[in-house]
Structures are given as structure tokens and as C-alpha cells.
Image (cartoon, rainbow, N blue to C red; front, side):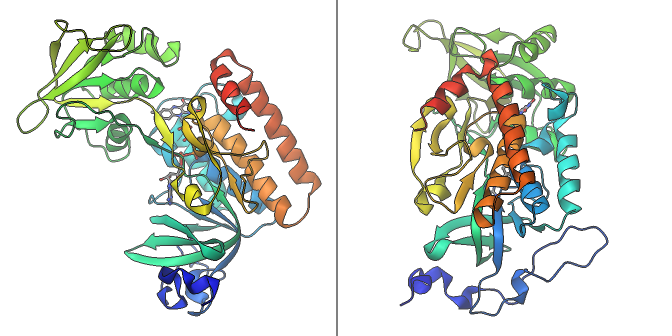
Length: 399
Ligand SMILES: Cc1cc2nc3c(=O)[nH]c(=O)nc-3n(C[C@H](O)[C@H](O)[C@H](O)COP(=O)(O)OP(=O)(O)OC[C@H]3O[C@@H](n4cnc5c(N)ncnc54)[C@H](O)[C@@H]3O)c2cc1C
């Protein structure tokens, strides 16, 4: 048995003969070159660089790698490109070079346009579900599983929302804050009338503000720590809007028969234990959980990359060096998957990963070297801010 067929899910016969990769180049027929439909059942589609995840990190990686001359495909499980950015209606801050003053959704538009205007293949609505022998990935699209093979992979899968265990946490009306943001800002659905938000990090501060803009009442933001987790600028906005941020409290129960009718909260002590006698209910019809994100690194476990536990970077993260290379020479990472940070840093890491993936396949070019040098310089400026101390400390643990 060849190593390719060892993994029985990927014998040649599983390749759908008529499937094709969407090419979003407006006004053009989908390109057939390098797309799955052109390959016979005994062959795998072959790419130089396959980028998994079409968020800001993956898009920048694709743009750079393509600019330097590599044959690139982006695979993303959403119908459009942009990752988290498509639901961010607020203006970003930072420096002009990193889209300060531009809304996240507009940054997604700018990057997507650039990708679509380049010779980059895009596979939408497709989920990478496994990493297999011979460095082949399994892709699920339209209920069909098929293999894709690339010389190098850049994983830019981002992160998933953390959940919290409390009584009745599965009652309808308990949501991840990011899910509510997607419902409202992407699909135009306002999921309730009165919200309680758990967690005061940036997501826990931004999403309630967007709820207020959509006409939803925000009863309170509950924070277990003795200080607000997110940026002061976001907290100040929400406080000005009259939303109380209740520190040193947590949720203990979602109350209601068929769906959420109230949140039972309690004060916590020095060891975060609930203090009996301090319980109170807040009426609401939705509870938003905003207690952080975890890097989506399951595929990298499967690929055999070393995974380290570094709480400052978001928990389990793939080991990577400053060139965004993992312990497997054909796999690079970037963005929230490598470290829960921001879109600006995700884009810079994407640039480094794209240039370094190209360099590993061909040779170092002057242009690639310049891109990497500049991106590293910009990253070090961002990370020298006092807000980034935790990240810098975490990155120092990657050895
Ligand atoms: C509410 C909120 C507000 C924010 N505000 C700011 C801000 O003001 N400024 C700022 O700089 N940053 C902000 N951020 C952070 C920023 O959005 C993220 O850091 C950034 O989007 C990370 O980019 P990424 O490309 O690594 O991941 P993502 O944007 O998450 O993109 C990853 C993509 O990969 C896809 N994917 C994952 N797994 C698979 C798979 N197996 N197969 C196929 N596709 C897959 C995902 O669906 C997604 O499209 C905010 C985030 C949130 C949630």
C-alpha cells in the first residue's frame, strides 16, 4: 500500500470529477487551470502555496506570495473573504498604515478586491477537515470530501470563541458575542431586546455598543476581574451610553423556561468564588458570552506540528519562529491562530508568512526580503506599546 492510499479517505477515486474551484474574478469564466476539475482520479490538484483561512492574515499572505510569483489558492469556509473583519462595523485605530479610521468591513473589501484582482484561486464555502499522509489536506465542500495538495501550507484559521459553564447555559438566548455580531452585522438579524454581556474585553465592549446602535437595550456588562479587560476608549463609549460595567461579578445561571428570561449573577471573592447572599437577577432575553478566543490549531496537531501552551498568546498555539515557520518545514502560520492579537498584527504576520513561504519554495528575492524586513519592523513598533506587554512576554516563551 502506498503511503498515499494508507489513509483510506483519500484514494484517488474520492476526487469529484466535476467539482470546480470558484474563481471570483468578476466577469470572467472560472479558470480551469490548476482547479480540481482538471485532475484525473489518480492525481491531486497541485499548488505551490495553499492558504487555509481568508481573514486578514490569510489574505495578506496570499497577496504577498502571489506578488512574488507563487501559485496560490485560498480555502475558506465562508461565502466571502475577510474572516472576522466582515462583521466589524466600527472604525479601527492605530496607524494609517494599518487602516486607522477605516471600518473592519471596509478593510475586508479592500483586501478582497486586491485578491480577486490577482491570479489567486479561491475556494469558498469549503472547510479543511484534515491533514493527512503525504501532506495532503482534506476539503469538505457541498457535502463532498476531496484532497488538495500543495508544496507549502499557510494556516490562517483564526480563533474560536471560548464558552462558559453555568446552570442552563444551553437555554436558547445564550450566545457567543461574536455570533451575535455576525447575526446583526452580516445577516441583519437582531436576536433580542435586552442583553446581559459576560466579559469586558474588547469584544465584550464593542458588541454591546453595536447592540445599542441596533436599538437593543444592554442591561449590564458583567466582569469577574476587578478591572475592565478591554481598551479604555471602548469602555468609555459604553459607559457614556449609560451601560453599567459590574466588576467582580459572574453569572451563575440563565433563568427561563423555554428561553432566556433573566441572568442570575453573583459577586465573587478573592478566589473568584461566588459569595452567597450577593445573588441578584437581571431581566434579559439574551446572554452574550465574551470571555476570550482560542486559536483554532486542531489541524496543526494532526499535521504533527509542535503545539505549546502559552496563556498570554491565547492558550494552545503552534510553535513558530519570527518567520512564522512551525516545526514542520512545509507549514507556516499567521494571525489569531499564532497568537490572539489584532487585525493589524494578523496582516503583518500574513505578509511575513507569504514572503517566507515563497522564499522556501524558490529563493530569496530582494522584494521578499524588503517585505519581511518592513513587516517585522512594524510588528515590533506595535508590540512595543504597553498594551502589548502580555503578547511580547508570551512570544518570548516560544523557544
Ligand atoms: C468583536 C471584535 C472586534 C475587533 N476589533 C478589532 C479592532 O478594532 N482592531 C483590530 O486590529 N482587530 C480587531 N479585532 C481582531 C481581529 O478581527 C482579528 O485579530 C483578526 O480578524 C484575525 O485575523 P485572522 O486572519 O487571523 O483570522 P480570522 O479573521 O478569524 O479569519 C480566519 C478565517 O479562516 C476561516 N477558517 C477557519 N478554519 C477553517 C477551516 N478549517 N477551513 C476553512 N476555513 C477556515 C474562518 O472562517 C475565517 O474566515 C476584533 C475582533 C473581534 C471579534
